Length: 250
View 1 (cartoon, rainbow, N blue to C red):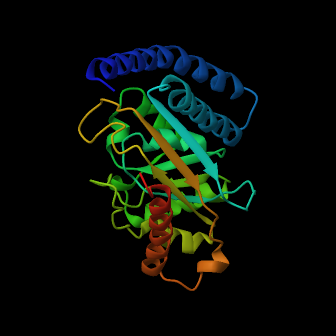
View 2 (view 1 turned 90 degrees about the vertical axis):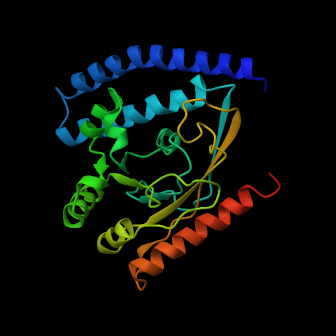
């Protein structure tokens, strides 16, 4: 793709993104506020988090096309409603938007930067997203387990920061310590193809195909005898193996 066409498609995307956000965010907020008059706080939060997913789904599946195409595949045999702990590899700042592919009520464990985004950062706070950089482990563990008990699935990027290349980074142990305490199923998520969507330090989206695979879950009975260190490496190896298969020949 030539540079002029790439700039044109990026300009179109960002203009549509701004326009869509300016319209949809107030409308979704009013819709959730209206529901709150009739629903409990718990059910209102459930609708609010799903509204965030709808917003993200429109961005990644409609507004970004034809510049970017997203293909999501569910290889899990478990068709339960959750909650789950979703463990994802992390290659791009677009990863959090891709979580909209998951048909669950989710909150994400993130670093500080998403909370600094205009408007979106405020909604992340309201939705209950967890800032792992601002919490001691005990507080993080208590809040995460409470969310799981409410039926809310947790999305974690245990590399902590996006990888510099296609090689998956080392995992931090915190979310795996929580999984062992909560006895919660762990679902590996593999994301491939968005290394340059956008590149590190840039907002320019390159043309590409993003693949997202939801793998079979690990039930607590399958990992209960592992410590956090062995568990994180087991999940990392599963994700790394699937990523290698996804990218074979590319």
